[in-house]
Image (cartoon, rainbow, N blue to C red; front, top):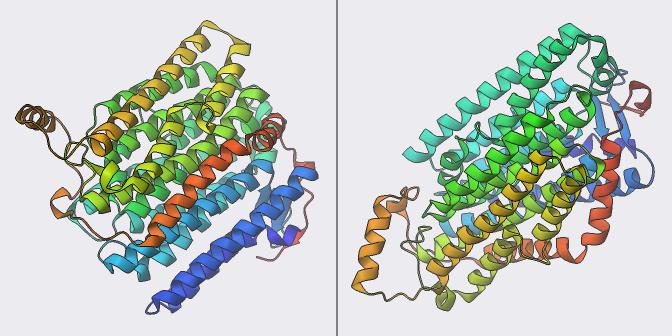
Length: 521
């Protein structure tokens, strides 16, 4: 079983090499990419069952024992996130295949997209199963290289400009992370996470705090935590629809995952929970206020993405098994629902020729299926019962109420307010883009013109036009909507798994637990 663990990273890298070889054969590239991600999904599901029933799996790459060699570590959390990520990556890939078939190489050049996409997947999976900080850094750098290629596909001026901002911010985060790794090695003589957890108590509290804050800031930038979230709303909306969807669903969650490992397993003694709570509140409230002020669907979703990262930081700051379990469930929910919403908005853009709610109208009659595909994940993200968004938030608030400090009650109120404003922002967009008739009075036209003066223009709006929607794009989005509903239907066993994850994460992994078999490099 241990031999399956390295395949989570090796298969995507091998697939990327094969797609490069067949750069002129689009069909072979697509088949290889789909097969690779499907294989990873099966492996991740198998590993999840095994580690849930037995114990975590640790693999020493190349036969080098910990802490000297690279350790690949798969516990319930890592296996669950790899499985969810692979499912999302397959769905977005199918969406991009339809877009590429309809548009040619204009939006998503397939010959470049597929290898970059698989390298991105390899970076995501490597980050989730990294057992040492330097390997986690390598995963982040793989992500950075691939994501810069993907975010600038099409080479339009706006994509190059926002891509430059994205890579500068990412490089700052990476440099800070690398410096933190160097300081941790200087202080503790290791970068293995299990050994860091064992030795962290040996250094002065002030040194612990400095190292802790450096990691939190580095990961907070990647997770788009306020005030380090300024880059996200401008970077994501300009990319092609499938790229935006996978970035929104997965990349910030890699940063959140790194925060979880840091807070629960590395620095569970040196606590900055109060600071994290204040940051969580600011992230939730300021992010959602930004969403309410927008008139363009991609920017609305980008700001809601920022605000809902605040829920995850909130649960992490409470630092109880129930809160961590609720946070993990909410991460799974948000990965799937946020990706689905961006795919649905991609369909809106093709059908209406724009994503501005000041321009789009009458889609309920013109495209009722798209209306449903947007509506279901929208009310889910807004937290209406009985959907997974409500389940995750209710569980988080319940865990918070068990601690019940004055600051936590303020965060609960802020979380409820954020949920209501999320629902308002998404339903306002629904009302204008779907319910509003195409005909409007002169007064409405004037009000719309005034409102448009204060709104940010849609990315490449002048180049947008109505385009045919291939069936596979609708199928991929519909499949993701079905997965969001499955999170509600199977909430019991999924949440039970997340509770077990929360309980185990607060028990640090020690070096003597890493007794996995060797794996060839």
